[in-house]
Image (tube, rainbow, N blue to C red):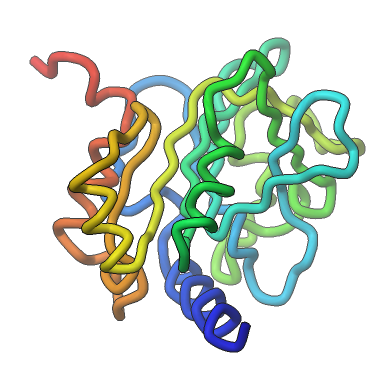
Length: 208
């Protein structure tokens, strides 16, 4: 348990250094606005979470979560990039099940205090202004449909090697060793940035 808590704290500490847009992803054409939701800025305990329609108790809280807001005030949506650190194979199975393809639509719930708070300690712009989907300051939480998702799993070296040899990743899944995810300045690792870059939906199209 102590090791697990230590790993969780290390993962959060590293991910807090990652920028508002996942490292390696380039801004694409059209309306889009990336914001990091987890780990939260500072000591704030109010932050977005993922859920299924009609569910008020079961929430998915990834170790790292970025929302890319898009659409219009009449038809808003988010794309998500999540990071999950898995210390055991059972932990991986549990977390993969939460992001498995489903007939249900996943929703991203954004509380009002989080939307009204500044983007970062050095940028006082309220988050709701960055999203581009609000005409005025929100007074109610925003629950938005998830259009597309990508999940990056960090595995122990043993589990990672075993997964590479015997498993097949789904289209929305990406994997890397935990020690690379938790290393100092991991967001500057060229190999990690190249992996995250491949999570962009623009990677499915010819660039000319």
